[in-house]
Image (cartoon, rainbow, N blue to C red; front, side, top):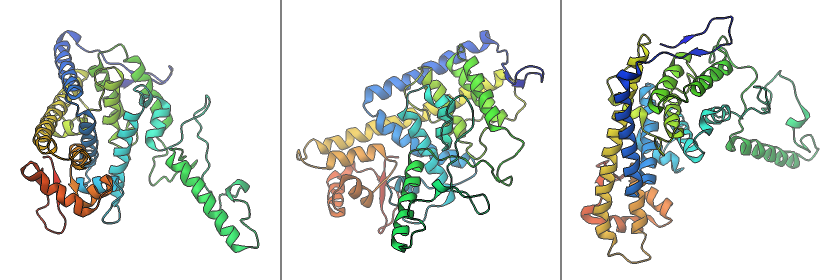
Amino acid sequence: MLTFTDEHSPPAVELPSLPWERIAGRLEQVSIAVMKLDARLDASGLATGWQSRCDMTEAVRALILDGHLVDIGDVVLHDAGMDVRSPTHELTRAATALRARRTVLARKAPWPISIDGLAALRGIMPTTGEGREVRSDFTPADGEGERDEDYPAFANDADPWRAQFADIDALLARTSKVLAGETPIRSSRSHLVYDPEIDEGQNEDLWLDLVKRTAPWPAVAAAAMAWKAWLDLNLYPRQPWLGFIMAGCILRARGLTGHLLPLASGFRAAKFRPQGREGAPEIVAGFCAVIEEAVAQGQKDLERLILARETMDRVTRTCRSNSKLPELVELFLSRPLVTVALGAKLLKVTPKAVDLMLMQLGGALPRELTGRRRYRAWGIV
């Protein structure tokens, strides 16, 4: 169990002693299973599609572990900007989890487990210089004071249209900062949402220090201890799914895999549930079970993709060279489900053309998921 050092020494998380002779064999087996999945993904040519499907399903399952139900179809349509209804709070959180996984994969491996990586994944601006203070550029609320830079030029001009256009330009500038990942946190936050007694900055330092000190450990054991420390420190309770992403980042940073494993899906399928009183060997054994379930699910999903690609390739071999059918096949391989409207938008064709391509696939067409006539979706399940 992780314990803190005494108050007379600098704050740190004490590393537990592990029975390496007893757990070395299990760690090796799990590492070999992860590397086999990674090698098979690279050899299959479906690594990109597999990772895209995995990220979307992980976003849904991570919210399920937090007690919120999100439909995978809503996540796919929201990701494509084709929402059929106003996004709910749960759907927005799932989209945030999806964006975090994609951000991690788009950057080099050591970046997510740094202070700048944590700040970017949380949606706040990275720290600058040696201090931990974050520059605050948000517009002050009523009673918080006013600054000249918060108001654009001509804001108080006699011409009302000129002032309106200046306000729009200022809004677009702030929106650009949000999209660039530079959204700062407020200097004072509501105590109804955030616990004022929790120092998130200190907890981040403690967790990053633990990750640094477990660098000589085997990758699986280091990821297990980092995940346990994340739970003990209660880092970011509003983003509980981030702990599994960071554990997967450690496995990726250590070179065990080049992909981000579906650890939330593995945790949901595994029987291990941390209660807070387990010892370090039990935590490592439970985390190994989570990885094994994640690898098993990844293998099954890859087998389904390989079989579906072989079936649909028999039809695409005879199509014209300028046909969009191969692109539709790639769409099926990279999305949990595909609708006619989604295919028409992403392939830049008409809905009628998508209907004709679906008919052309014939028996190779993936399974229909909705069973309705007005809203139909197909997916590889």
